[in-house]
Structures are given as C-alpha cells and as structure tokens.
Image 1 (cartoon, rainbow, N blue to C red):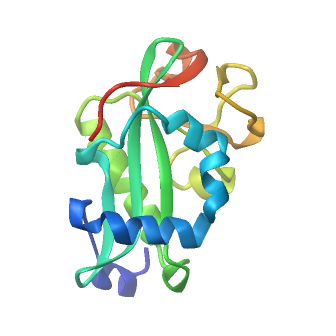
Image 2 (tube, one colour):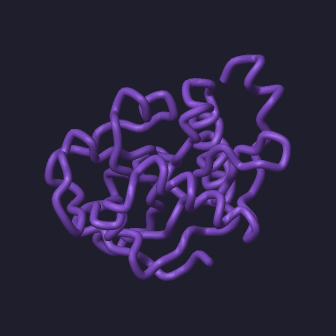
Length: 172
C-alpha cells in the first residue's frame, strides 16, 4: 500500500450494516454471473467467518472487502478466501493487499493453517499464495488449475490437504 493510501484507508471487521454496500461492490465488480462460478459454489452452505471478514473504509464508507469461509479439503480444515473486492475508483492503491494481509494475519493468529482461493497467481503471490499441485485439490466445478492457489499459514499445511474441497459449517 502506498503511504498516501495507508493514511486514507482503515481496515476494520465487517459489520452487519456494511452488508448491503459490500454486496453492491460485489455486484459492480463481478456481475450477476458470479453466483454460477465454482468459487461461489464452494461457499454455498457456509458463511464467512465474522472475525475473518474485513472492510476497507474511507471515513465510514466501505470501498473494499474480503471474507474467509470455512471449508474442508478431503476432511482437512482450511479456509477459502473470497470474495476480495475493491471499488474500481480505489483499485491499485494497495487496499486489496491490505485487506488480504489483515485477514491472513488474523487467521494465522487464530490457529488456522491453510487458505485457498481461485485467482490470478501474480496478484495473490504478493500475499504468499502459490499454485497448488495439479490434482491435489478438487473443487465442486470447473477451475483452471493454474488459478487454484494456497497460502500456508503453518509450514506443511498444504501437504496435509488433498481431495475434494467442500463447504464446512461455521461462519455467520
């Protein structure tokens, strides 16, 4: 994040009153087709974990958000990052990275070991995400294997996980 951006944005836990604004951000960024994507199908039947869901605030107005949801991979507990969204007027200012790092740091502090996502490897590499070896983790729908990424919050956590990723109970 740039020095100027870090003075403007405040990262805070997402609150109930942020919900409508965050949903509007998601609609604008990803459109109505987002619900058909494999990433959304993985989150069906679960909810984001409140203490791992954050908003980037300019004043009191959310301009970005990130959520982490509980999943299992072949029975091994993990987290699924997403959605991550930043309003188009505020992109490329470091808010997305700041949101991710805040959520990942808190997840690690709370003892979580592994976070996975579907996304652009060069962007997410800045937060420590790396490609998952082909075939190690399966999602409930099609996904480009090069976009299936993991961030180990504990060394060796990815090696312990393999198989089908499924929603896990928990969250809101």
